[in-house]
Image 1 (tube, rainbow, N blue to C red):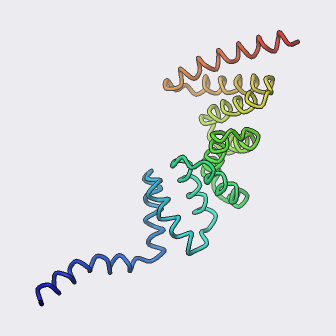
Image 2 (tube, rainbow, N blue to C red; image 1 turned 135 degrees about the horizontal axis):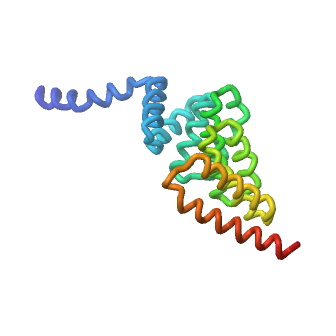
Amino acid sequence: MRRFLLILSVCLMPLAAESQVTASEKLGIAIDYFQGGKYHEALLIMESLSEKYELNPRHRAYMGVCYYYDWQYDKACMTLDSVMSQLEVFAPHERSVYYFTDAESHFELGQYREALPLYEQMTLVCHDNEKADALYRMGFCYLNTGDKENALEFFSSSLAYYLMFPDETKSGRMAQIRQMIAGLAQSLHRNN
């Protein structure tokens, strides 16, 4: 019987130790997962913490980014939209990540009008070599809302940034943009 109790206590020890982890330590673990690109794992911890505690705007923004990488675009939009105005105090590049993931989430949901101002805000705070991707998406937003003139303008700006900051992984995209610019220019010329 003693042996059984000893084995049982050894088996239950990790459970007792786990229950001793504070909310602050759990949040630290979630942030480590987040910074390591393990977004799903970070999200699971943050969701459980948000049920018991009010997370600050940065941690809720982290949750929004996690939802984006977990392909839960509706939750990403809801979470990021709710905190975006509270993130103005953070570093520009950090904000650019939040703007981009929020914009991309709206884009993936076909909410092009909602995505446009977020991409625009991103272009104001991101590094110059990151602007091409946002301008490219803005071109699609305008194209999908029927505004061919603005689509042409943003695709042209996107191409200019891709040319300014060459990236051989974007050569296919650059070829696509050139074709789209030509097609849009031709379409607009026919309509005038």
